[in-house]
Every structure is written in structure tokens, then in C-alpha cells.
Length: 88
Image (cartoon, rainbow, N blue to C red; front, side):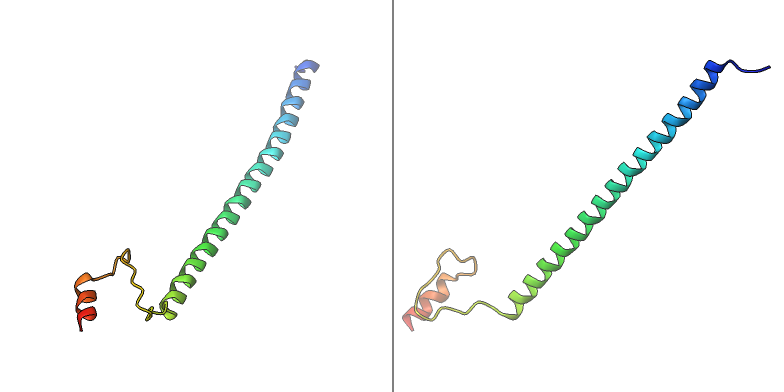
């Protein structure tokens, strides 16, 4: 028993459309993987920069002002210590 030619056309058409879909889907997945990898590399570089800035700040502290200027907004400001130094 032979199949009708129209069924062969549908079969080959379905096969061709599946191959084309698979090709484009593979391209999409590859692009998504590349974007994810680039994003992970960028996040890693950001983390390294943050660590380097923290280490630099640790090794090079800001100089303490000796001109008498006081920053009252500083969270480490101690009013009692400031008054005792001012009276001494």
C-alpha cells in the first residue's frame, strides 16, 4: 500500500519546519548562554573591584583633620571625648 503524495508533502514539510525551528532555537539558546556568561563575568569583575576598593580603604585610611574642624555628622563622633579634649 502506498501513501498518497499529499501525505508525503506534509511529512517532508513537517520535517523541514522542525529542522528550521531547531536551528533557530539552538541559536537562541546559544545567545542566551553567552549573555548569561557575560553577565556572570561582569558580576565577578564588579565583586573584585569592590574587594579592591575595600582593601585600599583599609590600607590607606583617610587622614585625620588636625585643623580643628569637627564633623558632627560623623557616626563615630563622640561628644564627651570632644568636650574633654577641648577643655584640656
